[in-house]
Length: 143
Image (cartoon, rainbow, N blue to C red):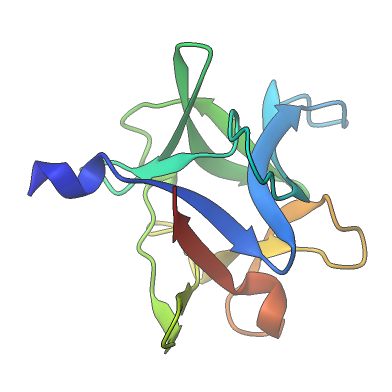
């Protein structure tokens, strides 16, 4: 069963993939989640795995970070810890032939889902689940 957790994924919304970047906003989170064009070959900084603790973790240059708490309009990416705001269930929106569309929902925050702002295509935030349609529809692509 542990094998399943070693699987890495590109996490896609539209033609963008979930990654992270230095936070230059007011929130100064260190790193924040960001969307960027999906890479076709070099996947550094784009490959996420689901941990046994229901976290989404990314390893880059030997360091592992987890998707974490929303703060203002940003979403933190930081050291993996026992912080419950790093835990996510992935409810299925629709089961397709080629891929399964999911939401990335905070387990311990009320009704908040990871949201890609298509009008500002790099921007990732937390939004009320379900209201905003496809901006919350993610596909995990095995890589």
